[in-house]
Length: 222
Image (cartoon, rainbow, N blue to C red; front, side, top):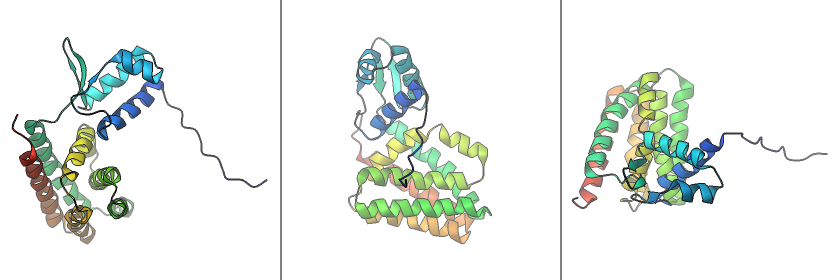
C-alpha cells in the first residue's frame, strides 16, 4: 500500500528540548528582554524537573541570553548600548574576514550555501514576514561564516550567534521596507560570488557598522 513516508522522530534529552524552546521564545520576543524566569514556573509549565530546567538556563547564560542576578533569579538579558557596540564592532571584524575568505573559497558547496541563504532571505522579504526575515538575515551571515572554511572563526562566531540573532531582530525592526534589507545584502552576495575578497570584506564590515550605529542611535540613553 502506497503512502507518504513518515518522518523520523528526533530523540533528544529533556534539557535540550527545554533549551530549544526557551531560546526560541527569547529570540522571537515571546519572552521579552528584562523578563524574570523562575525555575519553578518553567518546570511546572513544561512538565520538567527543576534540575532539567536549571541545566537549560545555565546554557542560555553561556549563550548570553539570560543572566543569574543575585537574590533575584534568572533574567532575560536586555541589550544595552554597550552590548550593541560590542556586538556590531566584533561582527564587523569577524564577518569582514569571513566574507573575504568566502570570496576566495574554491568549495562550491559552501558558496552555493551562501547563494541559497540569500534566496531564503529573498523569499522571506517577499512574504514580508518579520520573524522569517530576521532568521533568514542571520542565516545569510552565518552561511558566509561557514563558507570561510575557517574552523576557528566558525567556533568563535558560535559563541555569540544567539546574541546576534536577538540583535538582528532589533535592527531589522527599524526597517519598514523589506526591499531595503535585500538591498543591503545583495552587494555582499555579488562580491562573494565574483570572488572579490577585498570588496566582500569591505561591504560586510560596512554593513555591520552602519546598521549597528543606526540601532545604537535608536535607543534611549540609559
